[in-house]
Amino acid sequence: MHQTVNVDLAERSYDVEIGPDLLAQAGVRIKPMLHRPRVAVLTDETVAGLHLDALRSGLASAGVEMTALALPAGEATKSWPHFERAVEWLLAEKIERRDIVVAFGGGVIGDLGGFAAAVLRRGVRFVQIPTSLLAQVDSSVGGKTGINAPQGKNLIGAFHQPSLVLADTSVLGTLTARDFLAGYGEVVKYGLLGDADFFEWLERNGPALSAGDMATRVQAVTRSVQMKADIVARDETEQGDRALLNLGHTFCHALEAATGYSDRLLHGEGVAIGCALAFELSARLGLCSQEDPSRVRAHLKAMGMKTDLSDIPGDLPGAEDLVDLMAQDKKVVDGQLRFILARGIGQAFVTSDVPRDAVLSVLQDALATC
Image (cartoon, rainbow, N blue to C red; front, side, top):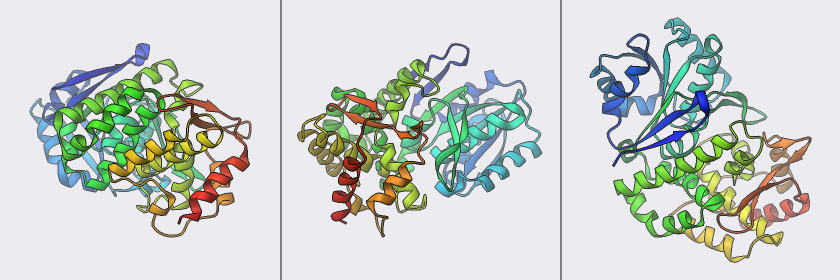
């Protein structure tokens, strides 16, 4: 049931291994890369409690020792104080340039751990072992690392490719239903941006995937990773096609900033809502039929996901303020905000030609239902 996807980046190429029970094989897979049989693991307290012993055992079975630092769980950890703590810990552990840092957790730990590896001694290698669905299908692949700033999400960081990704689909069984569905928001994104057949497959198989069917989970993760790997190979540093991977994220990042990067809105939930808004905006601009946003929302609702601004607890800023938050997005070029819109399901494209009034109208109508 194991699958391998290669991310083809010439001398920086690496494999993404996907399948159940990979933690038990971590030592065998990582040891050939090591100059000394020791790794430093960055994780969070939740993952540590659930899986750190299994990782330690998997490494020890191949004679690899590990030392670990567990940071608090949650998006707020992607900040200067926790980043500083991680880097100073790695230095205290005497991690050398030829050593390997292991980022063992969800997207927060993967982003922070990868960024720490990128700057430590001007760059050390790292391995991603993503433990959430969102991290397995998206953030662990492609080399984007970073932390958040008060001005916006992921504004501080670097491109630093991992040397290996181990996506153990068995650990997905320990996710809460909410966390799993948040990750599913990124899975759906891949079908919406470039593979209508995959979206149709998800419409049929989403319930089995959510219920825990392992073969379905491996297939969904593999297809998502393959799509991302293909795009990253064409555009590693987001000069063109890679921006397609941000479908839904322009709205999402503004909503995350508005909710203080708190558990009021998980990243994947914001992506799902953002995808629904992006398709609604596309339809209003005459780019796709109104049936497309309806179909997107119907599938998200059928999966029990957040689809509307009214699904976010608490108050939200007004439409004007949300658009202002979008202006801090990384995708702003020469002062113009780039949107990822769609001509239909599986037909996303990047554009800066979006009237502000159209965006305001979509947000005003969405807020009116709150």
